[in-house]
Length: 107
Image (cartoon, rainbow, N blue to C red; front, side, top):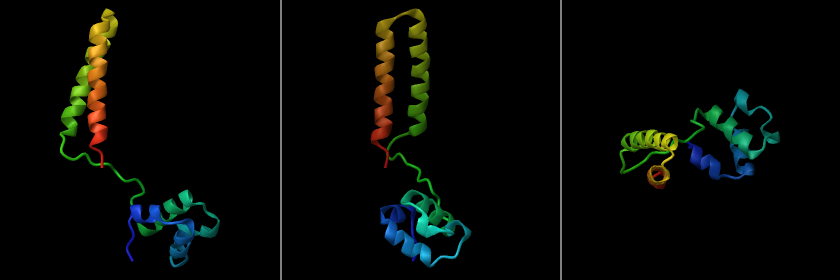
């Protein structure tokens, strides 16, 4: 059976050890002594799976929002130098809203 990273992550340690029992690989030596975190990494290496899952933003232009955040950070730095609390607050709030927008669309 083909496993994915998410499938393995949801399994118990006992289930993961049963899977490891049937696989002969250098990464799984001593699998009975590994805890879940280390066993998950070893199984992924043995099965050739990517250990880290990347988040994909759906419905947004991620690059555009990140460039807006960079511009707002420049504005924020300028407001700090000029000691302008109103502009500083406005820039910080805008950065915060854009970052929240990005995070809310992560899947």
